[in-house]
Image (cartoon, rainbow over all chains, first blue to last red; front, side):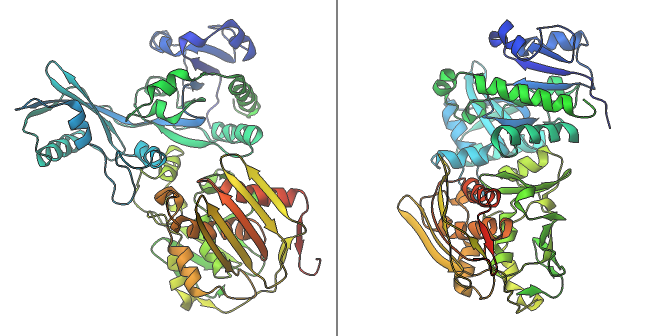
Length: 267
Length: 253
């Protein structure tokens, strides 16, 4: 069993205030059992070696109070076609399909939001060089099979594909392996605050956890908000913008979680 | 009915257990004290072990009147479109701890292996002392009314214009096999939404799981108006009845 030595809380830079730090029993950047950092500073903080493998990293983001310790993989492709096409047409052709579940664009929203997070999804946009296709992948996908799938799907939908090429080093899906004691502390906190255990869900856009998770396995994201804010498909930007990201009840939840983690024997 | 020999189906293995053992899922007792999550589904935990979608195995067991059994799920390929698969994967668990088929039905195959069962009707009786009402905004409302021994569980479950109504038995008498089949093969609201009657028939299985499997009820009249995540009100009502001493057992009513 690992000995967990410190707890770091990560907030978007714009919301870190002295009051928030005081309420969470920490001062920004101060050494101690609980530290508060800006998410935007993680590159610099990692370079300085301030995050240790034995620490717990909690990222405060819009996840609708779901615990997220898994990120989908990420692949970028560039598509060139003989005839000009709109990115929306490509996106529609690549929309995921499932033999049992309603996941189509016209399916009830709650069903789409239930199933799509676990499927390989695509985002498309027009660029000077062609259509940029971003694939958000799941365990079991491999880059070449994704490339082949995209090529075949577009060809069978009648698009005259000239070239389709990978333009980044594909990032595989990533899972931060939480210690039993961290999971137990999360369960206790949810029971105390809501009378039931937490929900675990996946990060759709596949970049948030990876940096910190590569250093400390006990890395997860949590936060209030709406699920579509984290969806790779059809985000509802207006409702995301209207949200108050960190209300008082959420700060209370974090305080309880810190207490539960501190009470864990090895944290 | 009771199990007289191990039963193997595509999805589960069932083993007989001695009288009084109750039902365990991968060794975790199906009781309210082991419920970790109850909203769109019911998950149980004990120590660092968990089982998911407990209602999809408890429903057929209770609808067959089985009171004692050890159940184990079988490992199947991942289908990450299912939230429960993502949940289990996030925690490093395998699919063997997830009960029920991918299409949203209960483990209906159990009712097709009657050669592993023998008739046995217990005389157990449990109802509520007085009407229990439990309501949660965005989850629904449930009323549980007292009933007499042998009345069974009578349900009237509605969602908007759709409704399912039936009586099932978890002890003393056998549930009409046609009703049992309809309940066990109906797909869940998570798969079908609430735009039709089918998921409400599935809900009768879920209610039986939660009220009679997680809870102890054998006889009651249940009236409910539900939203998609109705396990919050069924398990919530069981917890409320247990905490307030509102359950009455054989010969005490």
